[in-house]
Length: 471
Image (cartoon, rainbow, N blue to C red; front, side):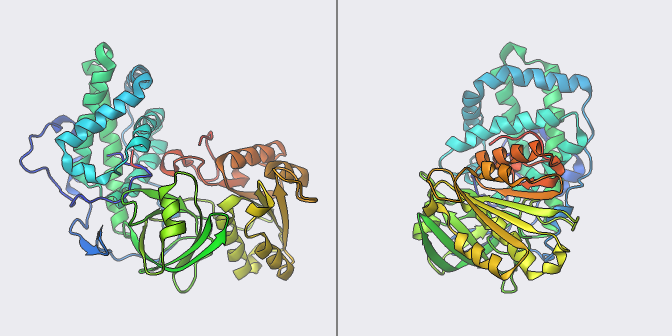
């Protein structure tokens, strides 16, 4: 089962079987172990709250470290070198037809299994692009059982918020293999079909078991009520929500969010605060052109509205004190998670152990430098914090230049631990600057630069190559 951001929660009623439907996917379903087939995701009976279908909340341990400790799924049985070669050769054949392949796949999936349609957004344009990306990632990792298990387990946990259940995986596998066979043409052989059955069986079993294990730890979603809404100018709003139960996250992590105005469409936002005793989270949301979710949050949301949050994600959290100074760089609304990290330090300054925090805040113009005054006031109260601005498209004495250029001029070296947040291009450029200055990759932290579930590093602190989740 592959579903990726931006799609959202499921209106499917958690069916564990397709009643009265011929078992077209028998061979694919049999690649999932009996243990996985028995372990259907819990919470399929749903209650209604403010027009949402919401799974009941299981007992959740309010341990924000749980997410970071879940990265050790059981390793799948690896495919042999010959099977891996067959998979890669078949993908090379169908990759030039990616757009047509995705259209055909979703068409037959929705015709044969109409109950699956409600897991996906109305507009499928973005969704189709991500099917092949997920397949390419799986094929790329298929001869690395450890990384494949991490990737598929992450996908499985993320799919809980969409309402995916075990029965959906057989339907998807059936339609996927039929689609691949159609577009591979004469290149599709029984041997390649068997290799794909094995690969999909490994991936789906890992996803199912990870989702099942996650069910015992935390809810699939948290209901969040808007308790504060303030316009900050320049199409930017500060949105504060309260959750029940408390939302278990760490400063620096990010959250997938769904609004009632765009159901089944999820977008990622980072809390701008460290965890609070009153269980509220504050988000900085800027409306972007064509962004239906951001438009709703900035201009339509009101106090009392209900949103939904997926589980916390991301590894851009403060590491164990190492004696190194901290370099924090924020571009645009990338200031939100950086602000949360600073707030966490301010709440417990002893964890710095004499280290200094250098904050760089960047934007194209002075008007877009939101939050700078607050950070400057904070630096006046805390001697360990230094703040510097960078403006790339306007002449402002003392603040001129792109954020990567200003970072390069600061002379940061190997004694620094860096945290970067902002537009993907800015983060990638700043990372290259820091690498050239001698900073080891393990000391540079940032969120994935594209679709988080697809592009997140598999070894926290050791990012893979960079590029810009219902798949």
